[in-house]
Picture 1 (cartoon, each protein chain N blue to C red):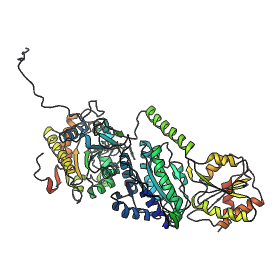
Picture 2: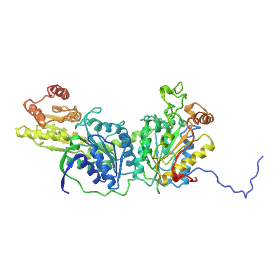
Picture 3: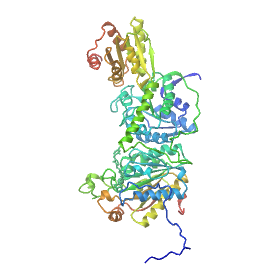
Picture 4: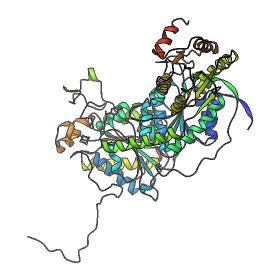
Length: 370
Length: 262
Ligand SMILES: Cc1ncc(C[n+]2csc(CCOP(=O)(O)OP(=O)(O)O)c2C)c(N)n1
Ligand code: SF4
Ligand SMILES: [Mg+2]
């Protein structure tokens, strides 16, 4: 298929359609509304299900019900709406049915603003809803990746009977870039052996997330954990740039990672041995890759559009084997490559020590930034 | 004195357990009419031959384990969200029969948004609504249907309408919408009313089977345990205290259903 100029939100919607999504349930919220609107037009055209729900609470529970029938289903939203979906996500996780969520992050907390942000990393990666569960979290940095990861999200969700989230932000959602859509897939006619479809010629099936007996609940927790261990072993994904001989290793995801790449290239032009690791799966997180990079790293520079959420995961992986420096912008502010380049230069001039808290040091420097 | 039965006497079974009702003891308290409501639903599904086509949606409340008692496919919804889940299921499987079974805390309090909008969309599902004037499962707190003056654990001096507001009449409210095809309130406090309740449940499933849109049956139900009454007193309490506030009747009947003999 040819490359076309596509808007992020619409590209993800069409990618989901081509991946065979059978139902979409959603509610308007900027900066993801184009996705909902695109689905409102396209899904009925294809004879598939579209419902504008009365709230994100209803939307996620429609997803839950539809997922119980074994169909490919999804919703999309942004921070305030995702918060409302957390109840449903926990139930979906507890019932072990697959679904895909696209979260187009915006500035927060509260109503915040509609500018691009990465402030909801913890909300998604660390769970968000109650109980013990994890979700696969995929972070695109381009419209093309947003397309590819949307398709992958459906495949992974079904393979592991889990929730898969495409965690992106307002800039990817709103930007237009040349990208290529995948071919249209057939919708499978058969339903999985756990799906609730009416007990025709078979014993009845029940899908629930309640296990009153703690030993039964623990069994469920173990099953979820076992699945998560498989996901960790098989599904870690990331992109490397100039890492072979890199001494200053920048780590950034999504749009922050993309901006950081410009800074890394500029640093290379100045003779600084900088490289970039861009995690694609924020969960499962590429701990092992970072651990291995400790052998060559003079320092890690974590760049995020939040107050240091992925930072915690990087620090966990580095485990004080190398200094970690943090640079973040918050509130919907996207950093310029120059800001990151300045951080790289500073690290090259004056290698940081292992001592001290990177978040605290960043906070002190931030007071100088206007 | 024992009377010998003549060997030529034959017996005809006139009353039996519907096969859809699984043969186990329920966890409901003695005198609780949740069990009666279950039986009526099972009878109707069986009479209509719907076992292999039905998907139930249980809710959060004493009936959270309703799926243990019906031999049909079932899911269990988050508190108040059963109508949204049912919407998701029905949209994927429009030729199946989908019903929710919800208490008054579940449906009329936390799930008010979901029930109103599901009704307004005319979603072609059936909702069985158990109004027992309190939150049974959590130990008898005030529900939106608690009647003025009624003592509950959170209205220890009786529901004071100035502080805690007035009861909500769900059936009447939903009947104002265009979406529903059938809306009725019935009671489970005596055999005559139980028969009428079964008719209403049948009408509701008939409406769905005919594709007429959302159908709703509110059932006045007992909670002797939390009301602090014996089973018999609880039946009387429904009659004396609930009926004046929650009048029985059919509030909306689609023209296609009029004259239907069930
Ligand atoms: C989100 C949420 N809040 C609170 C509860 C606790 N809870 C369980 S059952 C229930 C009340 C159910 O009452 P009702 O719907 O009237 O059903 P009944 O038990 O009376 O049949 C509540 C509040 C819960 N499970 N989930
Ligand atoms: S607590 Fe009330 S509603 Fe629940 S089973 Fe007992 S009597 Fe029925
Ligand atoms: Mg109740």
